[in-house]
Amino acid sequence: MIRCKRVYDPVSAEDGYRILVDRLWPRGVKKDALNHDEWAKALSPSAELRKAFHGEVIDFATFSQHYRDELRLNQAEGERIARLAQQQPVTLLYAAKNTQQNHALVLADWLSRLAP
Image (cartoon, rainbow, N blue to C red; front, top):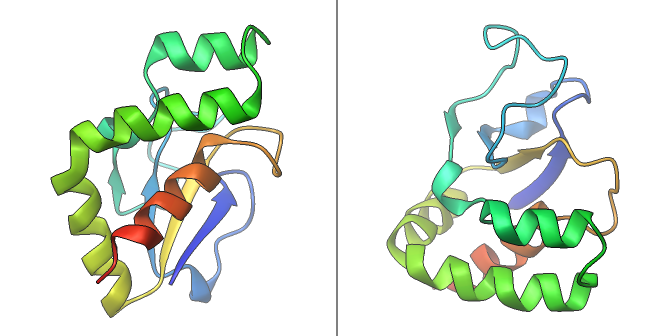
């Protein structure tokens, strides 16, 4: 099972393996204070794509498509996490304020499609 959660939300026993999926460290969070198992920078959107989306140059649908294209370049890393999610819960941690349209949701969907 793969779920998404803001880094600012409380840790839960149901979180399982916690992966930070932002390219930048979250604001206001000390590095030793974030309870996470790994930081998967390779699976975060490129700086150019992130800036285009947050600058409202592109909409969420366009962002999602371009992000999926970028994710295909890291297929092996995605497959590793998809296999891990078959064995235990995996929580993707992100800092975005928007909980309905963000890269972690796109990543979670992409990962779920990689699962055998």
